[in-house]
Image 1 (tube, rainbow, N blue to C red):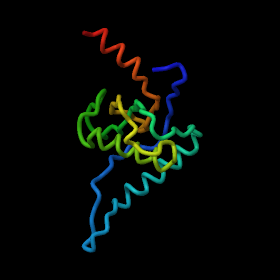
Image 2: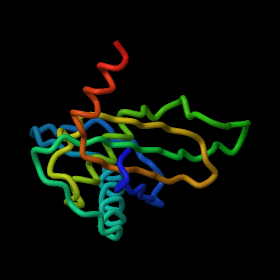
Image 3: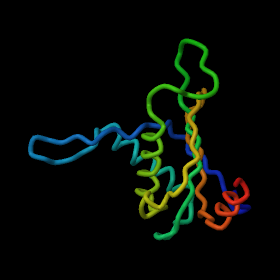
Length: 143
């Protein structure tokens, strides 16, 4: 993490990106609930005034998805049930693209993501520019 890193908080409950659907005529679409989530997430992200990242720069995404606790049972710590973490990451990336913060989620070269239970569902994330020299130094030191 570099000194200029900022952790952002979005008070939108996490929703996983579903598989796209296809009509009989071949049109591809996402379910209405996901489309609404993506619009709400993009709106919240726009309110944060996050400076946009340029294309062609490798990025690191660090994210924490705080999932709602079920009404019954003791749920503490890591969330290890559905939805899958990769689909939560994809939904965040879709929101970041829709808000114009990143041009394409293919720029993410490294992910550090966790999902856990919380009485207050939300998403916290940080985006950093990847530093190859720092990564390379760490790899050489471990050999």
